[in-house]
Amino acid sequence: MSAPLIVISTFRVKEGKFEDLDRYYKKITEIVKANEPQLIAFHGFLNKDRTEMTSIQVHPDTDSLDFHMQVLRDNWDESFGEYGQMLEVIRVEYLGKPPESSLEMDMQGDWNVNLKPLYITGFTRTTAG
Image 1 (cartoon, rainbow, N blue to C red):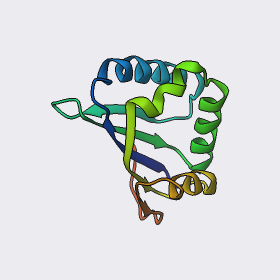
Image 2: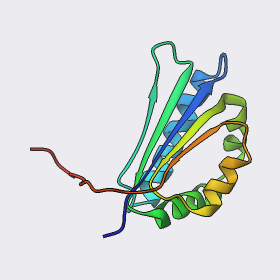
Image 3: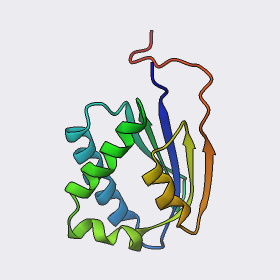
Image 4: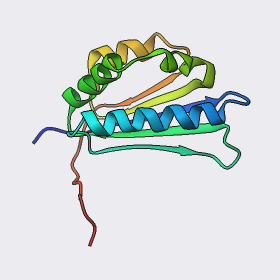
Protein backbone atom coordinates (compact mmCIF):
# COMPACT_ATOMS: atom_id res chain seq x y z
CA MET A 1 0.00 0.00 0.00
CA SER A 2 1.31 3.44 -0.87
CA ALA A 3 1.37 6.13 1.80
CA PRO A 4 -1.23 8.90 1.76
CA LEU A 5 -0.26 12.53 1.28
CA ILE A 6 -2.02 15.25 3.28
CA VAL A 7 -1.49 18.88 2.34
CA ILE A 8 -2.50 21.58 4.82
CA SER A 9 -2.17 25.12 3.48
CA THR A 10 -2.93 28.21 5.55
CA PHE A 11 -3.65 31.57 3.95
CA ARG A 12 -4.34 35.11 5.09
CA VAL A 13 -7.52 36.42 3.44
CA LYS A 14 -6.83 39.92 2.20
CA GLU A 15 -9.07 42.67 3.51
CA GLY A 16 -12.40 42.94 1.71
CA LYS A 17 -11.78 39.80 -0.35
CA PHE A 18 -13.85 37.18 1.48
CA GLU A 19 -16.78 37.27 -0.98
CA ASP A 20 -14.41 36.85 -3.94
CA LEU A 21 -12.64 34.02 -2.13
CA ASP A 22 -15.93 32.33 -1.31
CA ARG A 23 -16.93 32.26 -5.00
CA TYR A 24 -13.44 31.24 -6.11
CA TYR A 25 -13.04 28.37 -3.65
CA LYS A 26 -16.49 26.97 -4.45
CA LYS A 27 -15.60 27.03 -8.15
CA ILE A 28 -12.26 25.30 -7.53
CA THR A 29 -13.99 22.70 -5.34
CA GLU A 30 -16.47 21.84 -8.09
CA ILE A 31 -13.66 21.48 -10.65
CA VAL A 32 -11.67 19.24 -8.29
CA LYS A 33 -14.73 17.16 -7.40
CA ALA A 34 -15.65 16.61 -11.06
CA ASN A 35 -12.14 15.80 -12.29
CA GLU A 36 -10.30 14.06 -9.46
CA PRO A 37 -12.12 10.88 -8.38
CA GLN A 38 -8.96 9.60 -6.68
CA LEU A 39 -8.86 12.54 -4.22
CA ILE A 40 -10.01 11.40 -0.78
CA ALA A 41 -10.82 14.83 0.71
CA PHE A 42 -10.70 18.51 -0.24
CA HIS A 43 -11.89 21.04 2.35
CA GLY A 44 -11.55 24.72 3.23
CA PHE A 45 -12.03 26.23 6.69
CA LEU A 46 -12.11 29.85 7.87
CA ASN A 47 -11.52 31.42 11.25
CA LYS A 48 -14.42 33.34 12.85
CA ASP A 49 -13.46 36.74 11.46
CA ARG A 50 -12.82 35.32 7.96
CA THR A 51 -9.23 36.57 7.86
CA GLU A 52 -7.52 33.19 7.68
CA MET A 53 -8.33 30.11 5.61
CA THR A 54 -6.94 26.60 5.87
CA SER A 55 -7.21 24.19 2.96
CA ILE A 56 -6.89 20.46 3.60
CA GLN A 57 -6.30 17.94 0.85
CA VAL A 58 -6.04 14.20 1.43
CA HIS A 59 -4.46 12.37 -1.49
CA PRO A 60 -4.04 8.58 -1.72
CA ASP A 61 -0.45 9.06 -2.93
CA THR A 62 2.07 11.49 -4.42
CA ASP A 63 0.81 11.00 -7.98
CA SER A 64 -2.59 12.31 -6.90
CA LEU A 65 -1.12 15.71 -5.96
CA ASP A 66 0.68 15.88 -9.31
CA PHE A 67 -2.63 15.13 -11.03
CA HIS A 68 -4.41 17.75 -8.88
CA MET A 69 -1.95 20.42 -9.98
CA GLN A 70 -2.46 19.41 -13.63
CA VAL A 71 -6.25 19.66 -13.26
CA LEU A 72 -5.86 23.17 -11.86
CA ARG A 73 -3.53 24.16 -14.74
CA ASP A 74 -5.93 22.68 -17.32
CA ASN A 75 -8.90 24.57 -15.86
CA TRP A 76 -7.16 27.86 -15.14
CA ASP A 77 -9.04 30.90 -16.39
CA GLU A 78 -9.01 34.64 -15.82
CA SER A 79 -10.94 34.36 -12.53
CA PHE A 80 -8.14 32.27 -11.02
CA GLY A 81 -5.66 35.01 -11.83
CA GLU A 82 -7.17 36.94 -8.94
CA TYR A 83 -6.01 34.26 -6.48
CA GLY A 84 -3.03 36.33 -5.37
CA GLN A 85 -5.28 39.34 -4.85
CA MET A 86 -7.47 37.37 -2.41
CA LEU A 87 -5.01 35.24 -0.45
CA GLU A 88 -1.51 35.35 0.91
CA VAL A 89 0.16 32.05 1.77
CA ILE A 90 1.25 31.78 5.42
CA ARG A 91 2.43 28.16 5.48
CA VAL A 92 2.16 24.81 3.74
CA GLU A 93 2.51 21.52 5.55
CA TYR A 94 3.07 18.20 3.80
CA LEU A 95 2.29 15.06 5.76
CA GLY A 96 3.78 12.40 3.53
CA LYS A 97 6.18 12.68 0.63
CA PRO A 98 5.17 15.46 -1.79
CA PRO A 99 6.15 15.48 -5.46
CA GLU A 100 9.39 17.35 -6.11
CA SER A 101 7.54 19.84 -8.34
CA SER A 102 5.23 20.93 -5.49
CA LEU A 103 8.04 21.13 -2.97
CA GLU A 104 10.22 23.19 -5.33
CA MET A 105 7.35 25.60 -5.99
CA ASP A 106 6.67 26.09 -2.27
CA MET A 107 10.34 26.47 -1.37
CA GLN A 108 10.52 29.46 -3.76
CA GLY A 109 7.71 31.20 -1.89
CA ASP A 110 8.05 33.55 1.04
CA TRP A 111 6.22 31.29 3.48
CA ASN A 112 6.91 28.51 5.95
CA VAL A 113 7.05 24.98 4.51
CA ASN A 114 6.84 22.11 6.99
CA LEU A 115 7.65 18.63 5.75
CA LYS A 116 6.94 15.34 7.52
CA PRO A 117 7.66 12.81 4.75
CA LEU A 118 7.95 9.61 6.78
CA TYR A 119 4.70 7.66 7.12
CA ILE A 120 4.41 5.37 10.13
CA THR A 121 0.99 3.73 9.81
CA GLY A 122 -2.71 4.51 9.88
CA PHE A 123 -6.01 3.94 8.12
CA THR A 124 -8.76 5.83 6.35
CA ARG A 125 -12.45 5.19 6.84
CA THR A 126 -14.75 6.13 4.04
CA THR A 127 -17.75 5.80 6.34
CA ALA A 128 -17.98 5.98 10.10
CA GLY A 129 -20.01 3.62 12.11
